Length: 475
View 1 (tube, rainbow, N blue to C red):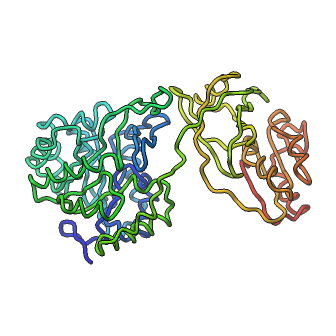
View 2 (view 1 turned 45 degrees about the vertical axis):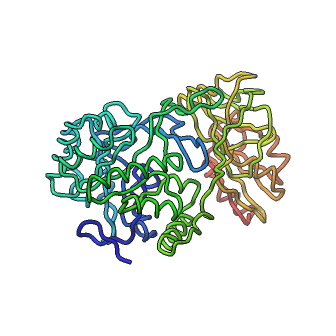
View 3 (view 1 turned 30 degrees about the vertical axis):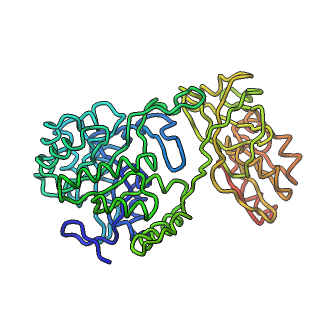
């Protein structure tokens, strides 16, 4: 089966919507080369300047296959993105759709002109529901919208406009058509809306946009409405997860299909298999891709209270909570303080849940202030564990030690090589000595073990102990 977008043949009818998975150019290149069913490569939205976006949490699962997010148009800025995109090669059978945003016509045009040589087409983000000055703020003024579309279209490459379901879809589409749009992407997220856990707003921005299965019916309604207004290509996105969803969108008038939330929890290999089977299902009338979908993503927050917050040094503390967690060595969790933020951490000990934390930024400063009885929310665990079936050298430097204790606790045949700047930063030293067959130490100031970095003595210890595995964390 051949697919075509305008005068360009492409390898497949799918894309991954802006801001999902393909947020780095290296990922764009990888997907371009490994997933043929994805014929349209949509970038994250790029603006005129660097935007760091909102602090975490920026996304939460509100129901199976449904999410709320407020990322804040995080992007490196157009000049930096131009440098990055220039370094990768896109296969000929792919259509690179660069998503762009701005606060006015001049900013939109400036971004498009800078990236013109790399794009096969542009997608105008006039529909982000949770960022002031941009997105829906632009899209709700149809006169400004028409002017922006006309300006970017005049550059000579196809222009898709990403439609908001929160505005008047009919009037928005009419304005884009007057401006000379080449196609429509529908829909962006619904909102802004609020999502609470224990009466706390989960997102740091408080409100965000709803995506996934929760907006499937809304997406179908909008695509049908748009198809009644134009014969232009429509990239449909909003709740698609199965071939049945594809067929419904096709009947509504979709030309191409964007799939995002359904990919949650999948690794690259699983995504490859998913898209391959999805296309087979679409044409055969089957629905085998259901088996690839991951309903349980372990995103629910669990409530813990602080049992002890023990400072080992001025910038290092052990945060011991009130109950255990089921976790395998090598996995990690997210810790969330409402209104303050969320960050991932290695689990130092599982019973009770204990974190070894170094004060680095605003969030760890907040954690350092917690006292006995204070509440902390945890979600996870995430990541994969390692299976060790032989003599293993555990090498930890600084807070990298935090990721090793569970290995020493679970596996009996371990040797520990631990290093830090001084003895106060060597956490759980006596426990490591009890669990490991041998323990070697280094400190930068020489007050315990060998003077220097742990990497200075690593070759010597490897030669002496001859481990079958060497697990490094930190150095």
